[in-house]
Image (tube, rainbow, N blue to C red):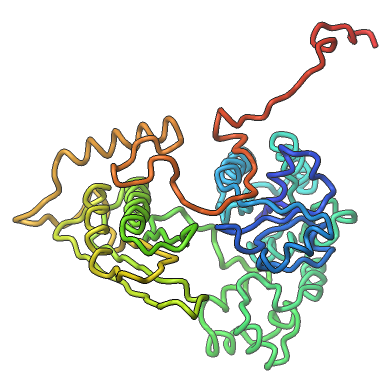
Length: 431
């Protein structure tokens, strides 16, 4: 059996943990640079605030409907996610972290367990220890556990956040309830192709000939169909190293001077190098991207990229950042107002197994230096050590005018609890 544990309205729930005044009220969370709505509470959904709504167009709507609009607080969300995932590790040795707010658990050897009680225990512990509400779907396969989770989420009062598909009768009933477009792994194009074949529900999809699915689609869709039929073909995925690492961001403002652009590129390159070292990889190739604001048609437009090939694999922030800055100098155009930049490292190889170059190699002083920098930044959790050409005060220059405090990751922003003096002295002990 597989369990899918999904946090309800995760970003909004994280905000509510430290601001109880938001409980039961509509809340919307914005994307980078306070651009558009990327998450919201159930109350905001009922008011029909659309996902992806540009906040500058919906500002008045939010005020009229008393919707609390907040900037994305990624340090808080990441820390709360880690706490939830650590709790889930106590319930199964086999856990696949699928996204920031959901994980699959493989429940192998649980034949004699009461799965309903087990799901209740999972939800209760996460809620008690973190304050985050969740839904749990349990079924014989990963795809069916997704279906079960959606059913649990669709009617919280009736399901109490839990749905278990433990019989073929329940499986068929759940699949007939699920529209084909809501099936995990079915995108808009595949949905249209299946609907042209007369497929309207997940159950209809399972009734197609497996040979026809394999001939007209791919092994991925065939596995999905088998999973929905109750035959497990999609295993838990093991954590693997990425084949490419990218850091791309929009700027807080448009920049027409090269110094600001160089600083952003250096910061993005440092982030990529840090991620390389975290997965014990080095890169052979570096790609720099720079683009103007495509939404402002009245301004001069420019979009270009530059590729740099290293003669030896590297994970050094000094090497990667220096190459990135030199590359952006060659594509920068004076007079253009740039809005977005990106750094991509690819051609990744393991640090302990790569082809050496006979004539050139990494400066041997870089390895211990990078190790020391990573250790200090990890200890103080604030990127205290940076290159001289980086902004020393902020990692990302994003517009975050509605940002809540970093309650769990910054000691200076920790939650303050005020107690009445008489309560502290024990005057109310017998009252």
